[in-house]
Image 1: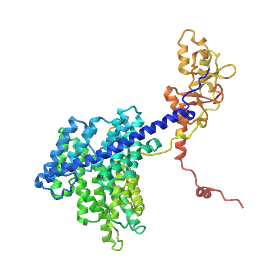
Image 2: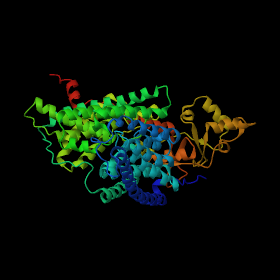
Image 3: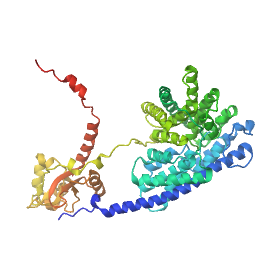
Image 4: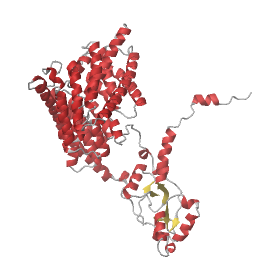
Length: 608
């Protein structure tokens, strides 16, 4: 007798109920992660402030100060090198995962390590970031906070009984909560987690993400006030008159993103060629940073005050050009050396300087344009990093959350997508995924509908499969297969039916070979050689469920039966049919079809 398959998820209310219960559990954990990550973000922010104040101003303070008027004098050349050496030793004897800006490491944990992050990373990453930034590193706190928040979520997922998918959601919740708590931008934080960590958009992940980000932002309000990270005054975006200028800026920002990403990995390659231990690389990068900082102190530290000055049009054109060049150079030599720090703030600064400088230059060339440098700085800030990271939607929303001005949406969308288009043409991988690609990890960041969830078994099954009677001799069936009879070789297995044509089993080529290896194996019946404990599919179920059943039971084909009468064979589903359906759909959807205009041109004229 055929056993009814218990893995029919579509009609299994218990499974659906269990899934909803698990989503509730994950959401509750996300709430805890959001609150804790909010406090962790504030703690790391304060730790950076303490280190910076002690080292550069010889005082105690929690706020991160501007380093333009520091008290170190010429010693500023040495201090970043000392911080780099400490970070290098921490990486060598602690964990190499603390190197870099954090987000690629979180992505790697999701993609290749089942969302598991080691506890030491959760401890060493924020400490190393505080040391690197506190000694003058030109980084932001957001990258380390995102990685630390992700590590927190991963650790909670490892502490409890969770699946890899649930750990991924918890890791993303921690990362999103870290960004939300840093910038007071909960919507952008949710989208960032979806674009760079989850690679999915489902209720099971979206609901916990929103909860974690909302609570982390509430903690930010409690500890750091309700204002955004950057206080921006009223801005005139000059829409639609300035749209052509925004379009040109979008192309320039795309090229800037490509150039910076390529330069960063070129610097990393140069450091890897040095004939010295990697623990010394951050010290060398820190020494280079110190030299730059000696002549242009604005490059040192986080630089949130400089970003605010650019966005509020408080800096002159020469200063903007200097910020754009020297901040980028400082970031390249520091981050390329393998120290610990975040990319967002320094690239925001360089992108904002690019946008502001562009507007000022255009005003000189076209005096009647009256472009607002602050507006162009805002969209440049979002476009450069959005294009470099391939998280364009995230930073459109992020910049909007900074201003709360709906007039910013149109120029933001235009500039960001044009920059992203340029980056897509000239960059195979993003600044986030290039490091992973070099390690052999390929990241698919494009979202598309899953064919297996859109197609039913009936759409791809063979509706008239050949079957063999249970009493047929194995030798006779082998002879028919050897003669290449079409109905016998169409599939790798054949359903077995009884005298009343009821499905009783299935026999594979392997079953036949094993039977023939026995003495008088050819005289055995097909019914005895085949399997009678069947795993079946149903014509009306989605293809995803049937393929999942194949995988879970390690079989390559499923007889398709009638739900009302599971002994009635109505089809055959094999792996080749699944692959053919997927490839055919992809080919069909990407094949150009003649349009109406083409048909009209090629249509023969009626004869007179």
